[in-house]
Length: 208
Image 1 (cartoon, helix red, strand yellow):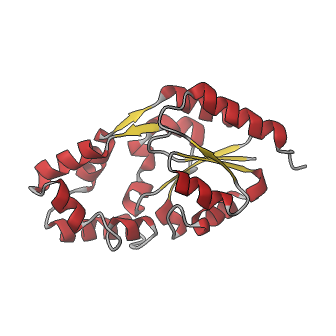
Image 2 (cartoon, one colour):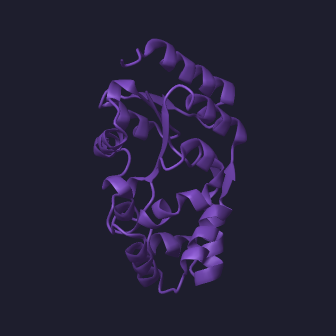
């Protein structure tokens, strides 16, 4: 049994504008200019799908697009600044780990993927090495391919997998493979999520 969690706005509150404000201070580009230069199909979205494949190449492209000289520590610090852990939701993930494998699958490029343990240290004792950016699998949510590659890598079947995400389109992408999807709505409580996980555990037969 596999429990696959999104990171941003599920296990963490993620305030993107905080990150953008810090990058504005660093680069001199306002929010709209940052988006125009990097956050688009040929920039961040391509990176989240695995192009480029390494963190070093990712940062090189970012700095070229932004005409900046951002370091790895600065990039990670500004990413982390927009994140606040949700202890009650993380506790639900911990409980899930007692019933099967747990993993994180977040739409992010290779650089964040290589440093997920640093920006999300609250997850390490639960998820261990199972912290994945979509770049690792060469596709981004909601593309069903990223879910198939993730569950294959983790050695699980779609029918034995529960996926939790805050974006309905990502949930639908997973469900096309037969994965059980759970939309984590903005006001959902830990108890509601716990109930969804328990319902999945109850109705999903264990593989012998």
